[in-house]
Every structure is written in C-alpha cells, then in structure tokens.
Image (cartoon, rainbow, N blue to C red; front, side):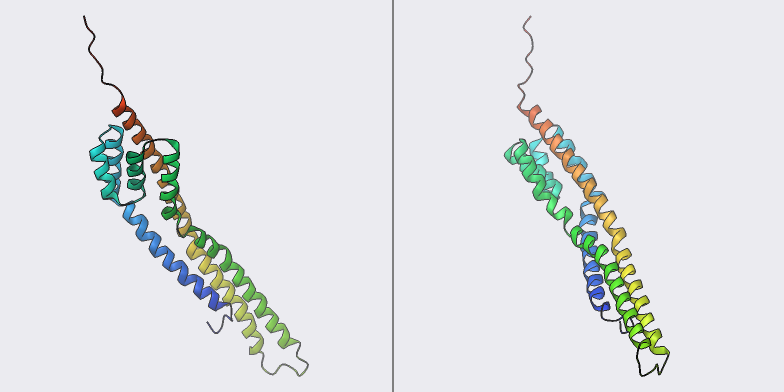
Length: 203
C-alpha cells in the first residue's frame, strides 16, 4: 500500500466491494441454478403447461426465487401482458443486482491505476527538477515504483471483477429466457384450463 501511493486506498475499497458482490452473486446464482432448483423449474414449467394450478402453485411457492414469483403472480392475477411485464420487472431486479457496481469497478479501477501512474511520474520529475540536487537516486525510483504498482493494482482489480461480471451477465440473460418460458407455459396452461371440454357428437 505504501509503495503504490494514495490511489491504493480507493483501489482497496473497490476490491473489497467487488469481493463482497462476487460472494453475494455467487450464492444467489448457486441457489437458483443448483441441480435441485433446475429440476423444480422443469417441474414448474411442465405443471404450468398442463394447467395443473395446484401443483404449479405449490412448486412456485416452494421455489422462493424469481421463477416461482413470476409463475405465482400469473397464476393468481392472470396471464395478460400487464401482469407478465410487472412480474418480470420485479423478478429482474434481484437477478441484475450488483451488475452495475461491478461494471463501474471494472471501468474505474484501471483509471485509478493510471491516475497513480501520473502522480508517480510527477513525483519523479519533481525530484529530478529539484535545484538543490538529487541526493539519492532511489528517490526517483520510488516515484517510478509508485507509478507501476498503482497501475498493476488497478489492472488486477479490474480483471478480478471482469470475468465474474461476464459470467453473471450470461446467467442473467439465461434467467430472463427462463422467465419467458414460464410465462409461455402459464399462458398455455390457463388457456387449456379455460377451454370448454369436448363433447361427443350425437349420432
């Protein structure tokens, strides 16, 4: 920290925030994408498609995640577009939580590293331009080291957050696709349940 200069402190804060977000997002997606959760999702879609409201409602309540929330809302309030859009927007928020902050960290960390580079180079040039003379050449190397350490630290923090950010975005896109599958399944099931039964033709 001392060799990297003052920008190392905001970089440290960004790295701690990134680590906390990665842990929270990892737990979230691990819970709703676990093998048992995927089986429950498939059962929910199948029950919704076949119009089994009792089974679909039980699976939706047991899910406790965005998929179950959307299914429960549509089973309770109907399959119109307004209900579907409202449910998806509500379920979308926890799926996208933290992505904007991770994106900010990926962008800001290298910029802070570059700022540390500039400050380190300015410090080195100030020593070289000192009219009293340079007493110890290691003072100049200290400024150069500050520049390099801060740049490296900024890149490390950015790369540390970049790959999980891309992973979580892909998971979010997949989750939105699953929400669309649930909406289609519930609509199919509700239409099938509301259709009048076939009557045998009189001969």
